[in-house]
Length: 140
Image 1 (cartoon, rainbow, N blue to C red):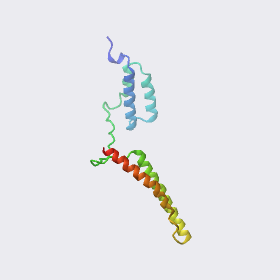
Image 2 (cartoon, one colour):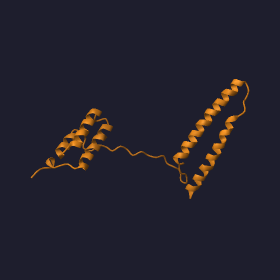
Image 3 (cartoon, rainbow, N blue to C red):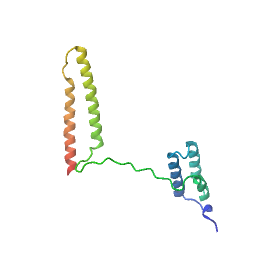
Image 4 (cartoon, helix red, strand yellow):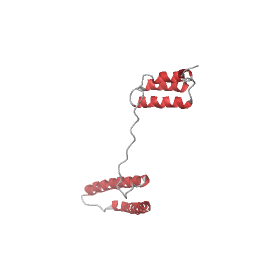
């Protein structure tokens, strides 16, 4: 009768050891070169003995990384879709740059120039309408 160490390992066993080695590397327990070498040996392992030697010097139960937490959203409020957040961010950046350029041109002329950044209020109005429509649709 053969023991566990002599039995053939399955792909799932090799993957479990690879995951354990990755967590050990992420925690700083293994350097990259050692992690890479052990990982190659894990995928080439045939028996449980081949796998056991790769994790023998690691703690038996490595802590799992904490799940990322999401900020609490007040009841009745849902975050905007990512596309709208990106569009508002881009608009704000473009408007800010235009405003700075307008101020610099006005200072260079010695008098306030026509407030041409006002034209950027047109896309802001469109974004405002779309944002309102999305929020209304999400409330239903």
